[in-house]
Structures are given as structure tokens and as C-alpha cells.
Length: 359
Image 1: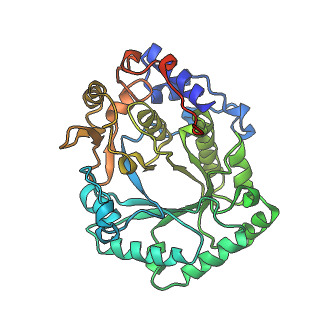
Image 2: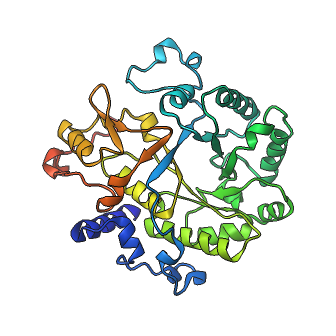
Image 3: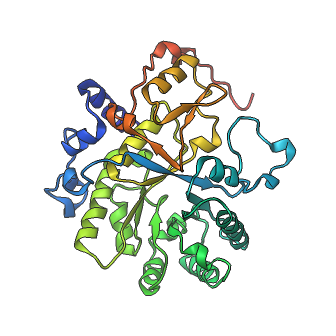
């Protein structure tokens, strides 16, 4: 459904030559926030969103459980020859990334891995850094999460490292995320870290449920719905203005969005929501836009020469400088992208051949 939603927004913005931030602030998209949250009845998106979109966004680099941290972690046979960084230390030194999303396994190995990352970042050229932790529903109960968290807090080697934590993302399984036990523990646990939901954000009003349960907020991904994300961002801001006793958060996350369309649409929404840093995976797990036809690659570079640069090997790749990407061209284009994608460049669907995996 979110794909259809984005297609409709794209069609409107393209037909009217309207940039996405303008469409939202002028509400020519017809967003009725009160139909989602009663608290927002009669409120326009422009009343609660930032006056202007973010024009430069920090890349929050994902550190996966199996991702190598330093060159010594890469076996010679596994060393890539793609012209891009491969290890965490290489990304830090070559692209200046200073925001990180670190995956947790919810086991005894987490503390050791966090110590290694702490040492790596402390010894790097960075003057400061910040990170988030993502457990992807790995903890069976809120009690298990609290026990491991308090153990790591008591670890002297992690004390200064955890000072740079922004929030923890979805530590509990969906079955446990909104349980009475979770609600009780969050209410009693005065110094628990900020925790947001992600996988549990599966209904249009899940954020309200999460806030009532003691969470600090939720994540935004276009795949969960653009209009839903706008409503959630507005509810977060409404609660922040009316309740100064709690921390309210909304994060920008990723499902490895790539150009030449989805990445820019995603960034257009993130910027409109006021995100300063967003998880980005495509620069890490793909070789830029090298898989696209040459003409499309050239068009992307022409239209978005601030977001992309031409790699020394010829393909477009994100132009990450001091850990940030510039998106002026994204904000000026109708729904983020201004690339000619003629259907004649691609294989018509009637010519696709689907082979059974059982053959």
C-alpha cells in the first residue's frame, strides 16, 4: 500500500511541478491529521513540522553483526575490489561518518563488540560521534533487556561510550512490546534509555499505543507510509510541546533504499520531517548505482550532482563529506527526484521470465 501511496504523491508532485516540502506545508495533498489522532484535530501539518526542511543530513552508518570493524577482520579472499570502503574504520576515515546504528544480538558477545567499537572510535580522527542501538526484537522480555542493559551500564569500559547513545530501537519482540509487564517495567525503571518502536509500528496509530506504554517514539521509513510518518511526526511534536516531562523521539531508518527514485523520495520526506541524521545502507551494501544503464547513471549525476558524485571508476555513488550528504536538488525536485526514467530503457513486464526455484 505504501508503494501505491508514494506513486500517487509522485504523480501529483510531477503533474503540478511541486516540491514535496511545499506540498506538505501548503497541504495540497489534503492531509487530515485529525482522522488519525484526535489530539491533532484541526491542526495542519505546517503547524507542527519544522518551518523549513533539513538541507544537509548526516549518514547514520549501519554496523551489522557480521560487518568487519577493521581491515584485520577481513580475510584476503573476502576483500572487495569495488573502490569503496569495506570496514567500519575505513568508512570513518574516508567519509567522516560520525553517526552509527549498531546492531545488537542480545547475547554475551554484545559487550565485547561494543568495547571494540568504542576503542575504534576513540582512536579515530573523529572529534565527536553518536550512535543508536538496534536489537531487532532479540530480547524475549523487558526483564532480559533491563538486565543486560544494567550490566553494560556497570561496565567501566563502556561508561563513556554509552554517553553517546541516542536511543535503543525495538529491543522486544512484537508479542512483548506492548505487554502489561513492559508497561510496568518502563514505568518503574526511572533511568532506562530512550526506547523507540520499529517492527511494532504496524498500525496507523501504533505510535500512540507506544507512547502510552512508556516508549519515547517511533521510526519513520517510507515503506511504513508517508502520510502516517507525517502524522506521527506531528503527534511527537504536539506531545513535546504539551508535555515537557518526557523525552519524545522520531528517528529516520532505512531498508537499503537506493536511487534513482526511492532514495530521493525517502530523503525528501526525512528532510521535511526535520531529521538531522538518517540510517543509510545503500552506500555500504551496494556499489553505488553501477547496476543501472549508463544513460540513467549520467542522468542521475546531472540532476543530483550534490547528492551523488562520479566515482573514480565511473559510477555514481553518494557524495558523503564529513559524514553528511547535501540534498538541495532533492528538495527542489518534484517528490525528490528529477531523473528521466523512460520505460523503454527497461525490460517490459510481459517479457519477464520467472523461473521456479524448484526447477
